[in-house]
Image (cartoon, rainbow, N blue to C red; front, side, top):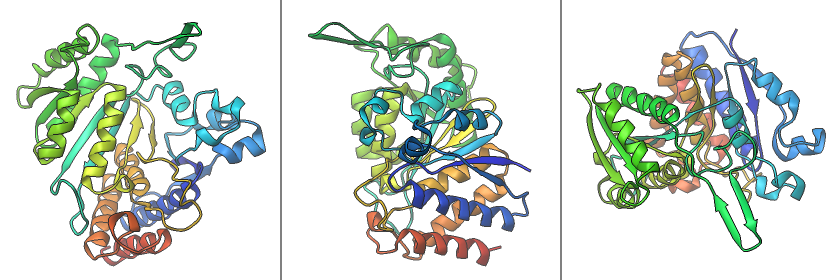
Length: 349
C-alpha cells in the first residue's frame, strides 16, 4: 500500500489539508485504485509546541521512507525568533530532498471570474538555486554582511540544475500544446540568466516538435496580463518562477486555486502555491481547491492518473455549478465546497 505523509501546517492548513485527504480518498475509491495509507507528521507552530522544532527530525526521517506527502502552508513569520532564523519547513524540505522541479499550473475555471479567461499554462520553476539564497549553497543561506552597512546575496546557476529543469519543461510542453517560453533577464544578468537561456536553447534543439520563444522577466509580466492565454509552459529560475506563478494564479481567478508539486526523480511534495492566510484561519472560509489539486498532481506523479483526472473533473464541475468559495465570488465554506466535490466524484462514478 502506498504511504503518503500528511503535514497540516499553520493557519488554514488544518482546514484545507484534511479536505484534500478526503477528496483524494474518494477519488481513489471511485477510480478503483489502491487506497493510500496516510501518515500524519508534525510540522509548523504545533510542532514547535510539541517537539521544539517547526520541522522535527522524526518528520524528516519518516518522509525519507515515503514516496510523497501533502504539505500545508506555514506561517514561519509568526514563529518565535529562534525558529524564524532557520530555513522554513518548505525551504528545508525542497533543499534536503533535492526537489528540483516546482510545477505550478494556472488554469481558469469555467463559471468563476478570471482576469484572463482561458488561461491554461504551467510555470516550471527551478527549485534549488538561482536568486533564492536560502537554497543555493551547501551550508548557510547564501546571504552575508561584510560590514554593518552592506548586505550581499548570491545567485547560483549551474549547468546540471539548468539542464534537468529545462528537460523537465520540454517534456511537459511536448505532452501539452508544444510551446515552451524561457523567462530570463539576459539583457542585464548576462552571465547568470544568460547561461540559463543558452542551455535551455541548446536542449530545445533536441525537441524540434516544440515551439520555443523567450522573454525578459519584466516583459513577461506584461504579456501574461495582456494575453496570458497564448502561453503554454514557462520555464525559469527560482525567484522569477515564484513571482510569475503567483501572478498567473491571480490572473486565473485566485491564488486559492493555484496548486503545485515539488518533485525530484524519486519523490514529490504536494503544496498549494498560496500562504497560510492567518486572517481567515479557523473561520471555515478557506478555498481548499489549490490543496486538493496539488494532491491530484501528486497522484498523477505517482502514476494514479485516473484518480487525478476524477478530481480535476469534480473540481471543475463543482465550480461550474456555482458552488464557489468567497475568493471566487461565492459563499460556500471550506467544508461545503469539499463536500460538493466529493459528491460530484461519487455521482459521476
